[in-house]
Image (cartoon, rainbow, N blue to C red; front, side, top):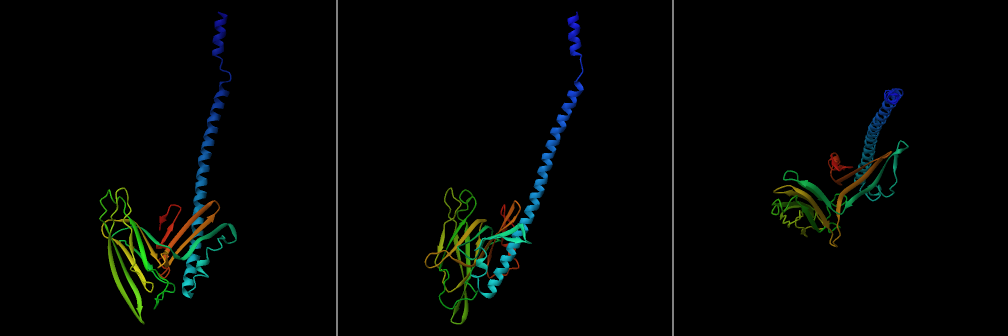
Length: 288
């Protein structure tokens, strides 16, 4: 009887329960505070990174504005080698307001490229590219200008979507001098895609219709469905790829741990008022 009573007293003993419950509540509160602090810390870090990204974007844009200034200046004085084309030679960072955390750097600045490329062409939004010699003055005799070109293009779901017979119009106007007289010619060529099974790439088109004493103004227009990609590669008589009068600028803005890359492709002798129609911003290649 006494043993049974002792067992009952043991199980009915409530001393220390408040302490255990308090510890459990405290533990839950600590875990909750830690979880909440991690969430808040993450939000703060995201906000800080977003702010840094905005600053790095504007730093990259500042570099782009400087490059456009030098492009305009070089065009006005007719000297690209000593100004615009030299922007990326040193690869040294330029700091704003003597702040070592704010800088931008040119990774590329060139007034001559190997080829022209464009994406997502439609019947209402063709691609345009000019082959124009330096100085913008049409030569009266043979000059170092392309005499041929290759054109590569592709269509999404070409073969499976039944687009193998889709056509692309290549139209260009050429300007040249006959004696002291300025003349022009317009030519159109229609090419079929002709993609094969398992490929979206259309047949490569090659032409030797260019002349090294003429300027050419190309328009590439899809006649059926959309064209995903075109690449026009002008070539010299030696076969070297050469597209004069077309500028490419690449600049990166840096602020703390954030970097923003900016690229611009544009005709050298086109007006610069709408230049940002040509600009593609990354990280994610979002087109402005």
